[in-house]
Length: 501
Image (cartoon, rainbow, N blue to C red; front, side, top):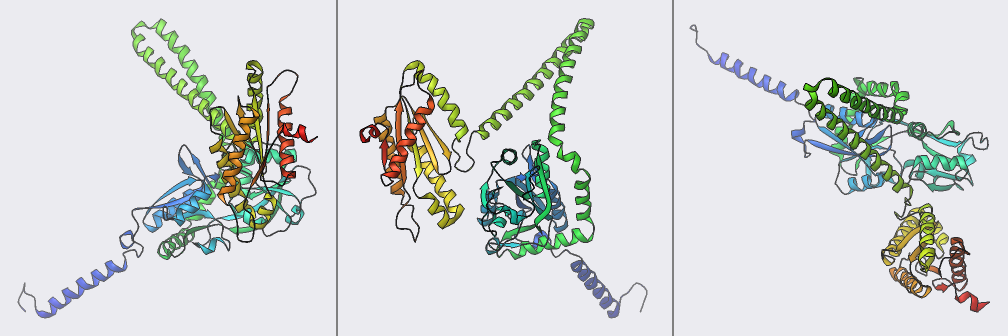
């Protein structure tokens, strides 16, 4: 062969080399490349916004140890992971409806396995009992029989306690209120995840709460996808496996464990920093005024600085005002039915009573009780019972809709409708409309012969200094009692009781 020329053997070797290079490229291309899958560049994970420090929301951004794990998971599988912290029931529905891709930090049970597929283990969860300090009568889950126990609605402890007979489950939407109820004796205990419980207890600053160290159950949380979405589940499991093998998971957990004590007091630190900032701003204003007097050449610049600092101070105070107003509003609303609660009803009644006394205007009160609700609740369970309460509350709110009308959940299955400047005749018309609309809903299950109905008691008074607002409540309550006695699904007026005596 002459120099600079190729024979057939050289051409064949060159071709084989190109094939080998191409095959090596294919072998080194990640099998989980996002080009091979149906997803966009972002996979949306949803988490429960109420389980800090595992998942929580701060200034509209999801944070927490599980959030950090999810973001690192995205790097391993070649996707951007977006985590949103929202209401837990809403999160579960969105994944089932295909509006999001996966649920982050969920505990597996038989009911959930019907609709979700679950990843490999994520985080260890220890479910503990929180009781009033000095309560030696509760040491294990068996001691919770015939006790009132608070849990988050829709969370794993709610389903966990269903396995044990005799436990009276009470759902709570605010952990601080829940701990206060334990302290006051309204609740015997609260069951929740150890991490979440310790954090919420420190943040709420409620004293006198004791933690039973023996867990009711210890298990690992997981990531869940809609049943049948095996492609995404395989991606997630591959990423989790790599994170555990290369130490990424251990590093994340170590970071959070290392700053746990500091994190538990983060709200206190933030509050201190806020007040410190305000003090600093005030000092800056004082220094600015001094410099204006001393250095006239800097007057214009310093005036601008003062205006900026003043605006910052105003905006900070405005944010605080709005936050306090929102907290006050939440404390006045019933968490289940989303109408006013008993506490707010008492406040409104006292204000209206004073106005009615001054203006000599009649005030009417309708007390409403769902008939045979205990039987309905025992037959179909708390979920169906809660749904029934929501529907009844919505009907009452839509009927009593004048500007002077007020609707609240009085307690359990009992509601009240307060009507300003309304006589007993007018209130009876409203009450009859509520009764008819609820009966016409036809809320009925397969093995019940009757539909859900309500009994109503109506009373009206013109306030004066010789009677108390409780007289109005008692009069409506007596009328309600008579309505129940008369066979339920009826309206009884307080004035008619005088004719029966």
